Length: 267
Image (tube, rainbow, N blue to C red; front, side, top):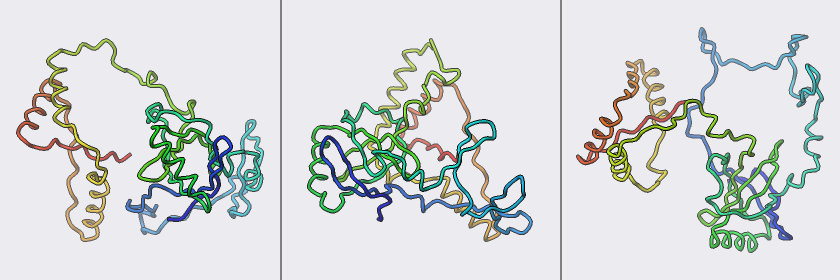
Protein backbone atom coordinates (compact mmCIF):
# COMPACT_ATOMS: atom_id res chain seq x y z
CA UNK A 1 0.00 0.00 0.00
CA UNK A 2 1.56 3.27 -1.13
CA UNK A 3 0.57 6.74 0.13
CA UNK A 4 -1.12 9.04 -2.37
CA UNK A 5 -0.68 12.12 -0.19
CA UNK A 6 1.47 13.14 2.76
CA UNK A 7 0.82 15.97 5.16
CA UNK A 8 -0.54 16.60 8.64
CA UNK A 9 -3.73 16.17 10.61
CA UNK A 10 -4.37 19.19 12.82
CA UNK A 11 -6.87 20.20 15.49
CA UNK A 12 -6.41 22.93 18.06
CA UNK A 13 -2.65 23.24 18.54
CA UNK A 14 -2.07 19.53 17.84
CA UNK A 15 -0.35 18.58 14.57
CA UNK A 16 0.13 14.93 13.58
CA UNK A 17 2.14 13.86 10.51
CA UNK A 18 -0.01 11.51 8.44
CA UNK A 19 -0.10 9.70 5.11
CA UNK A 20 -3.20 9.14 2.99
CA UNK A 21 -3.90 5.75 1.38
CA UNK A 22 -6.71 4.68 -0.91
CA UNK A 23 -9.09 2.43 1.06
CA UNK A 24 -10.69 0.74 -1.96
CA UNK A 25 -9.57 -0.70 -5.28
CA UNK A 26 -11.50 -1.76 -8.36
CA UNK A 27 -8.88 -4.01 -10.00
CA UNK A 28 -11.31 -6.95 -9.98
CA UNK A 29 -13.68 -5.18 -12.39
CA UNK A 30 -13.64 -5.96 -16.09
CA UNK A 31 -12.46 -2.86 -17.97
CA UNK A 32 -13.80 -2.02 -21.41
CA UNK A 33 -11.93 -0.57 -24.40
CA UNK A 34 -13.57 1.30 -27.25
CA UNK A 35 -13.06 -0.61 -30.52
CA UNK A 36 -13.74 -0.12 -34.22
CA UNK A 37 -16.61 -2.55 -34.82
CA UNK A 38 -15.32 -3.44 -38.30
CA UNK A 39 -11.72 -4.32 -37.34
CA UNK A 40 -11.85 -4.54 -33.50
CA UNK A 41 -8.95 -2.08 -33.40
CA UNK A 42 -8.76 0.00 -30.20
CA UNK A 43 -9.83 3.60 -30.76
CA UNK A 44 -7.31 6.29 -29.92
CA UNK A 45 -8.58 9.42 -28.22
CA UNK A 46 -7.16 12.51 -29.90
CA UNK A 47 -7.25 16.05 -28.50
CA UNK A 48 -8.13 18.30 -31.43
CA UNK A 49 -8.58 22.07 -31.64
CA UNK A 50 -12.02 22.33 -33.32
CA UNK A 51 -11.06 25.59 -35.03
CA UNK A 52 -7.69 24.63 -36.52
CA UNK A 53 -8.31 20.84 -36.64
CA UNK A 54 -4.81 20.52 -35.15
CA UNK A 55 -3.98 17.75 -32.67
CA UNK A 56 -2.86 19.34 -29.38
CA UNK A 57 -0.13 17.64 -27.31
CA UNK A 58 -0.53 17.41 -23.54
CA UNK A 59 2.19 19.98 -22.86
CA UNK A 60 0.07 22.65 -24.57
CA UNK A 61 -3.09 21.89 -22.59
CA UNK A 62 -4.08 23.95 -19.55
CA UNK A 63 -7.21 24.10 -17.41
CA UNK A 64 -9.57 26.97 -17.99
CA UNK A 65 -12.73 28.50 -16.56
CA UNK A 66 -15.40 30.14 -18.71
CA UNK A 67 -16.08 33.56 -17.10
CA UNK A 68 -18.30 34.86 -19.93
CA UNK A 69 -19.77 33.33 -23.07
CA UNK A 70 -16.80 31.76 -24.91
CA UNK A 71 -14.38 33.78 -22.77
CA UNK A 72 -11.89 31.81 -20.69
CA UNK A 73 -9.20 32.40 -18.11
CA UNK A 74 -6.40 29.81 -18.13
CA UNK A 75 -4.90 28.36 -14.95
CA UNK A 76 -1.63 26.44 -14.88
CA UNK A 77 -0.87 23.50 -12.59
CA UNK A 78 1.67 25.65 -10.77
CA UNK A 79 -0.92 28.37 -10.08
CA UNK A 80 -3.41 25.80 -8.75
CA UNK A 81 -0.78 24.24 -6.50
CA UNK A 82 0.17 27.66 -5.09
CA UNK A 83 -3.37 28.52 -3.95
CA UNK A 84 -3.20 29.82 -0.34
CA UNK A 85 -5.26 27.00 1.15
CA UNK A 86 -4.62 26.00 4.78
CA UNK A 87 -5.84 22.51 3.82
CA UNK A 88 -3.40 22.07 0.90
CA UNK A 89 -1.21 19.73 2.99
CA UNK A 90 -3.33 19.40 6.11
CA UNK A 91 -6.48 17.60 7.24
CA UNK A 92 -7.81 20.51 9.27
CA UNK A 93 -10.30 19.24 11.87
CA UNK A 94 -12.76 21.97 12.83
CA UNK A 95 -14.77 20.05 15.42
CA UNK A 96 -16.04 16.67 16.60
CA UNK A 97 -19.57 15.29 16.21
CA UNK A 98 -21.46 12.09 17.05
CA UNK A 99 -21.03 9.56 14.27
CA UNK A 100 -24.78 9.18 13.67
CA UNK A 101 -25.16 12.92 13.00
CA UNK A 102 -23.69 12.57 9.50
CA UNK A 103 -26.24 11.29 6.99
CA UNK A 104 -24.95 8.53 4.65
CA UNK A 105 -26.02 10.78 1.76
CA UNK A 106 -22.98 12.97 2.42
CA UNK A 107 -20.33 10.24 2.17
CA UNK A 108 -18.16 10.20 -0.95
CA UNK A 109 -14.76 8.42 -1.04
CA UNK A 110 -12.93 6.56 1.72
CA UNK A 111 -9.22 6.74 2.53
CA UNK A 112 -7.03 5.33 5.27
CA UNK A 113 -4.97 7.77 7.31
CA UNK A 114 -1.72 6.28 8.53
CA UNK A 115 0.80 7.90 10.88
CA UNK A 116 3.81 9.68 9.44
CA UNK A 117 7.28 9.54 10.92
CA UNK A 118 7.20 10.61 14.57
CA UNK A 119 3.42 10.80 14.73
CA UNK A 120 2.63 7.30 16.01
CA UNK A 121 1.80 8.23 19.62
CA UNK A 122 -0.37 11.25 18.81
CA UNK A 123 -2.11 9.25 16.06
CA UNK A 124 -2.96 6.40 18.45
CA UNK A 125 -4.09 8.83 21.14
CA UNK A 126 -6.54 10.49 18.75
CA UNK A 127 -7.79 7.15 17.44
CA UNK A 128 -8.46 5.73 20.92
CA UNK A 129 -10.14 8.91 22.13
CA UNK A 130 -12.48 9.04 19.12
CA UNK A 131 -13.31 5.36 19.59
CA UNK A 132 -14.01 5.67 23.32
CA UNK A 133 -16.05 8.86 22.96
CA UNK A 134 -17.95 7.72 19.87
CA UNK A 135 -16.96 10.86 18.01
CA UNK A 136 -15.98 11.71 14.44
CA UNK A 137 -13.60 14.51 13.49
CA UNK A 138 -15.11 16.93 10.98
CA UNK A 139 -12.94 19.18 8.86
CA UNK A 140 -11.52 19.99 5.44
CA UNK A 141 -8.73 18.73 3.20
CA UNK A 142 -7.52 19.68 -0.28
CA UNK A 143 -6.85 16.73 -2.61
CA UNK A 144 -5.58 17.47 -6.10
CA UNK A 145 -7.66 20.40 -7.40
CA UNK A 146 -10.52 20.39 -4.91
CA UNK A 147 -11.07 21.13 -1.24
CA UNK A 148 -13.28 18.53 0.39
CA UNK A 149 -15.32 18.41 3.54
CA UNK A 150 -14.05 15.35 5.42
CA UNK A 151 -14.89 13.08 8.36
CA UNK A 152 -12.19 11.20 10.30
CA UNK A 153 -13.32 8.14 12.25
CA UNK A 154 -11.67 5.17 13.99
CA UNK A 155 -12.06 1.80 12.24
CA UNK A 156 -10.30 -1.53 12.90
CA UNK A 157 -7.35 0.00 14.74
CA UNK A 158 -6.81 2.75 12.16
CA UNK A 159 -8.21 6.13 11.20
CA UNK A 160 -10.40 6.38 8.12
CA UNK A 161 -11.00 9.66 6.34
CA UNK A 162 -14.13 9.93 4.25
CA UNK A 163 -14.61 12.89 1.96
CA UNK A 164 -18.09 14.38 2.19
CA UNK A 165 -20.33 16.27 -0.17
CA UNK A 166 -21.14 19.87 0.73
CA UNK A 167 -24.75 20.72 1.62
CA UNK A 168 -25.37 22.44 -1.72
CA UNK A 169 -24.33 19.25 -3.55
CA UNK A 170 -26.88 17.00 -1.86
CA UNK A 171 -30.43 17.12 -3.16
CA UNK A 172 -33.33 17.17 -0.72
CA UNK A 173 -35.63 14.14 -0.65
CA UNK A 174 -38.68 16.34 -1.21
CA UNK A 175 -37.38 17.01 -4.74
CA UNK A 176 -38.25 13.42 -5.72
CA UNK A 177 -41.31 13.51 -7.98
CA UNK A 178 -44.45 11.60 -7.03
CA UNK A 179 -43.44 10.76 -3.46
CA UNK A 180 -46.44 9.03 -1.80
CA UNK A 181 -48.48 11.19 0.53
CA UNK A 182 -51.48 10.26 2.66
CA UNK A 183 -51.24 6.62 1.54
CA UNK A 184 -53.41 4.28 3.59
CA UNK A 185 -51.55 1.24 4.93
CA UNK A 186 -53.74 -1.52 6.34
CA UNK A 187 -52.82 -3.00 9.75
CA UNK A 188 -52.57 -6.45 8.19
CA UNK A 189 -50.11 -5.16 5.58
CA UNK A 190 -48.01 -3.48 8.27
CA UNK A 191 -47.94 -6.67 10.35
CA UNK A 192 -46.87 -8.84 7.42
CA UNK A 193 -44.16 -6.33 6.47
CA UNK A 194 -42.83 -6.35 10.05
CA UNK A 195 -42.81 -10.16 10.11
CA UNK A 196 -41.01 -10.38 6.76
CA UNK A 197 -38.36 -7.82 7.70
CA UNK A 198 -37.92 -9.45 11.12
CA UNK A 199 -37.38 -12.85 9.52
CA UNK A 200 -34.67 -11.40 7.24
CA UNK A 201 -32.63 -9.57 9.90
CA UNK A 202 -28.95 -10.49 9.53
CA UNK A 203 -25.45 -9.19 10.24
CA UNK A 204 -23.54 -7.31 7.57
CA UNK A 205 -20.60 -9.35 6.30
CA UNK A 206 -19.27 -7.71 3.11
CA UNK A 207 -17.36 -10.88 2.18
CA UNK A 208 -20.69 -12.63 1.55
CA UNK A 209 -21.61 -10.28 -1.29
CA UNK A 210 -20.21 -10.52 -4.81
CA UNK A 211 -21.02 -8.57 -7.96
CA UNK A 212 -23.48 -10.68 -9.98
CA UNK A 213 -22.88 -8.32 -12.90
CA UNK A 214 -19.11 -8.93 -12.95
CA UNK A 215 -19.59 -12.71 -12.72
CA UNK A 216 -22.16 -12.69 -15.54
CA UNK A 217 -19.90 -10.44 -17.64
CA UNK A 218 -16.95 -12.84 -17.29
CA UNK A 219 -19.18 -15.78 -18.31
CA UNK A 220 -20.35 -13.82 -21.35
CA UNK A 221 -16.74 -13.05 -22.37
CA UNK A 222 -15.70 -16.71 -22.00
CA UNK A 223 -18.74 -17.87 -24.00
CA UNK A 224 -17.97 -15.47 -26.85
CA UNK A 225 -14.29 -16.49 -26.91
CA UNK A 226 -15.25 -20.17 -27.04
CA UNK A 227 -18.02 -19.63 -29.61
CA UNK A 228 -20.63 -21.06 -27.27
CA UNK A 229 -24.30 -20.10 -27.08
CA UNK A 230 -24.70 -16.88 -25.12
CA UNK A 231 -26.73 -17.01 -21.89
CA UNK A 232 -30.32 -15.84 -21.98
CA UNK A 233 -30.98 -12.47 -20.31
CA UNK A 234 -32.85 -12.63 -17.01
CA UNK A 235 -36.46 -11.51 -17.27
CA UNK A 236 -37.34 -8.43 -15.19
CA UNK A 237 -39.23 -9.08 -11.97
CA UNK A 238 -42.96 -8.57 -12.25
CA UNK A 239 -44.77 -6.14 -9.98
CA UNK A 240 -47.50 -8.02 -8.15
CA UNK A 241 -50.12 -7.13 -5.59
CA UNK A 242 -48.55 -5.92 -2.32
CA UNK A 243 -50.47 -8.26 0.01
CA UNK A 244 -49.89 -11.21 -2.33
CA UNK A 245 -46.15 -10.44 -2.45
CA UNK A 246 -45.91 -10.17 1.34
CA UNK A 247 -47.77 -13.45 1.88
CA UNK A 248 -45.64 -15.28 -0.71
CA UNK A 249 -42.41 -13.89 0.79
CA UNK A 250 -43.43 -14.92 4.31
CA UNK A 251 -44.38 -18.38 3.13
CA UNK A 252 -41.02 -18.71 1.38
CA UNK A 253 -39.12 -17.66 4.50
CA UNK A 254 -41.08 -20.05 6.75
CA UNK A 255 -40.32 -22.92 4.40
CA UNK A 256 -36.61 -22.26 4.88
CA UNK A 257 -35.94 -21.03 1.35
CA UNK A 258 -33.62 -18.09 0.92
CA UNK A 259 -35.13 -14.90 -0.53
CA UNK A 260 -34.37 -14.21 -4.17
CA UNK A 261 -31.60 -11.64 -4.42
CA UNK A 262 -31.84 -8.77 -6.80
CA UNK A 263 -29.13 -8.63 -9.41
CA UNK A 264 -26.52 -5.95 -8.99
CA UNK A 265 -27.29 -2.66 -10.76
CA UNK A 266 -25.30 -2.10 -13.94
CA UNK A 267 -25.57 1.65 -14.13
